[in-house]
Structures are given as structure tokens and as C-alpha cells.
Length: 259
Image (cartoon, rainbow, N blue to C red; front, side, top):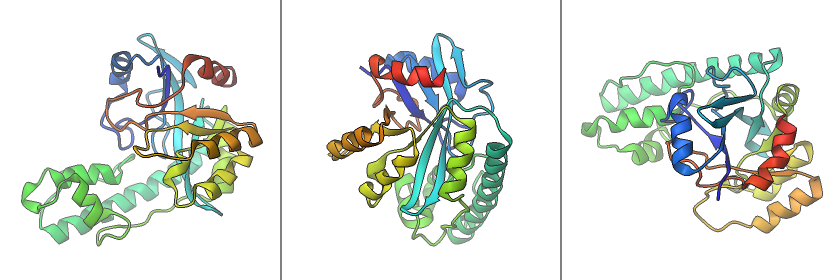
């Protein structure tokens, strides 16, 4: 039974669920604790590192993409306090996201001869653009095909974005967060290399809905070697929470650090 889902996205980045809807979605899933970890952004609607909303504990978090010596990875920060270092980093990233989003939109509209009902804004991500493309059936692209053939990394409408390096990202998160960890290690090309970064971190995502078998023994070994807290979450971009996460006893160790 999942007690704490510590990886959830909202409309503040590329999720489909508004913050106000999170408590109800948590109750449906039987989840008591939810970490709001929007991409490269701290949710503006959360006023404290830990918040109670309608009987559900919300953890203010962030998922930050960084460029490490082992390749690009995603870091998860939990229990965020606002600091100048993190605010400055997020502001720079969001400016890059807005510029990048505008250019992707322009390329898609020029290529497909359609007009997307989108404006570049904070939190805009490629999923928003893929959904907007799918709303134009005359384009011939659904959501998945838009990603695969248009705006994915090798697509004709893809635009890279600026990401901070590992050192700067970790430093900003360390100053502002109670815990800093590595997200979904088996989504990277070389999980073992990515996991080597956890020597500098507090935790790692142990439970995650990969949809395929993964070498959990490797993660467990790294957790033991580096003294990490095991974390987990659904990485929900919709309202289906609790597909992965922590049981209550495992969460209590995390709660002590968040407090």
C-alpha cells in the first residue's frame, strides 16, 4: 500500500492536474502524503515546505534537470525553502523554457500549417505542445507521434534548452531542500553511471513505475553503500496517484528529515 507518493507533477509544469485537485486524487488512491515536484519550478501555490490540505500532507518539492559528468539526469529536491540561489537558478531556467517553447511552437506551426492555441509561459513543456498538436487531427499527429516524429530529441521541431551543471544544481538544492536525490535511475542510458552520482546525494528513487523489469538489487546495493534514503513516486502527470511510492514505515524516516 502506497502511503506517500513523492513524485507528482501539476499544471505548474507539464502535469494535467491543478494543485487544488491533488487532495481528492490522493484520497481516491489512498495516499496520505504527496510531493509536488514540478519540472524546474517550485509550485507557487505552496507556501511552506510541508502543508496540510484537506487532510493530505503536501511536500513542496522540485524536479531539476542537470548536466552531470555522467550525462543529463533529474534531481529531486524535497522540503523546499526559498533561497536566492534556487530562485535565481529557476528564473534562468524558466526564461530558457519560455524562449525554447516559443521557438518549438513556431517550428511546429510553420511545418504543419496550423495555429496552436499556446503562448510561451513559465512551466511550458513539450507535453503541452504535444497535446496542442493532438487537438488538430488534420495535422495527422496524435500525442505520441508528435513526440516521436516532431518534437522529440531527433525531431525536426526539437529545440534544446539550457540546463545547469550538476555542481550548481546540487549546491542550489542543498541550500534550499531538506533532501536531495536522484530520480528514476533506470530511465538513463547507463543506470550504474547515473547511480554513482548518489555519493553526493541524500536519497534515490527506489520505487518507480518503469513498466518493465529493472535491477532493483543494484539500487539496493547503492542505497546501502551510500547510506541513502529510499524514495519513490508515481511521476504522475495526470490524476492517478499511488502507482509507486513509500509505505508508511519507510516514509517515517523521510518525515524526520523533512521536519
